[in-house]
Image 1 (cartoon, one colour):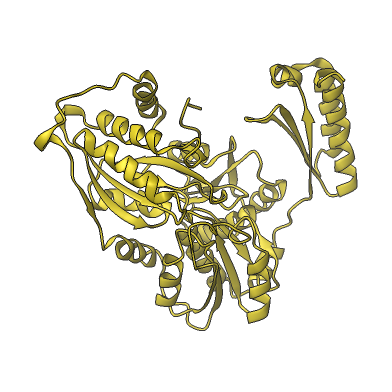
Image 2 (tube, rainbow, N blue to C red):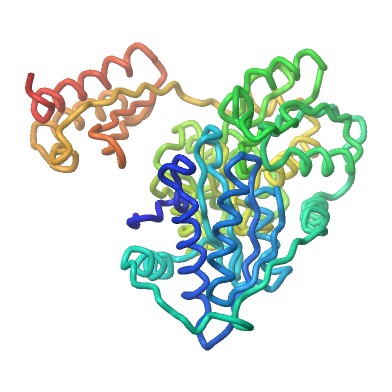
Length: 451
């Protein structure tokens, strides 16, 4: 993880941690790094509906223009649209101003390269070096050497046509409820599903700058669940603020998380002969139920660290066309280069329609095992040492033997807090909760803060 860039760009409270000054510096440094061979780089910039988006876009744009780069503003548009459109505009970079599923006071900046993938670590590192050195001085960027800014009126239309091109047939007679989180997909999702002829109900599609993700969207599906039941819909889809995630609600009002969606879509891709090497990619946090279901279908799972960045890296190395996380961040690499909530929902609809079953029936074919999580608070300097302790390792092995065949143990240090997360999966909730506590107690006893 970088000094400014995390696994998903630069993020923080807008105008406090992520200031206009920092956005300006990011724009300036990124444009300079991408201006090799005296080329004037072209950036496209999209944003979600947060009130701070205008401020940060203006500042970042000024930074790009100040070193001779040019900018095309796409306006409010999903993150995956920027990744898709960077090639259409033959741009050198695509920038998204969004904090995804976080509340409105947060914002973020992430950058895609000209091929539609997130910037590599080396390029991010060079940008960080320039910003943190505070020595950027290039007086030659004056007069005609400054950049220009324009707006695209066609970006949303191009993107929605791309989405429609990934779906064959129509959705006539299908009742769908869409929760757009008062975010970047508030126009996109409706346009796509109405164009396909679905009977569409949309909620959380009136953004005001501060209501993004507020009791709605993929992290708060309760209103979507209620609306699906109220309308008698076949299915409901919830996206997050920048529309790169998807959570599904079935016809009985029950949530279907990313693990089940991956299973359902993998089954469809396999039947169509499109699941390369009969494999999918998932993280260490994916439920054991996903592994068992896919194993029964003859589908193997490549396991990565937590984060879509690591999922994508693995997919690009192995050729896997489907990967994702429980959170609903899924990548269909045969269609696009990043997570795309609306596209994922269309791929789910393909599987649903071809099955001849109700969404609830598809859901129930996949058994998800209960999970128990206990956070063991430790001294920061012991987060990694603790897991190599002989007593701790022995206790973990003891529990692993007890749940072997019916569950699993996953223990990992938090990346941001002085915690070791002890997670168990199994068939008996009370039993695995007790086992998780049993392991956590020893970790705290040996490596926790002494009172």
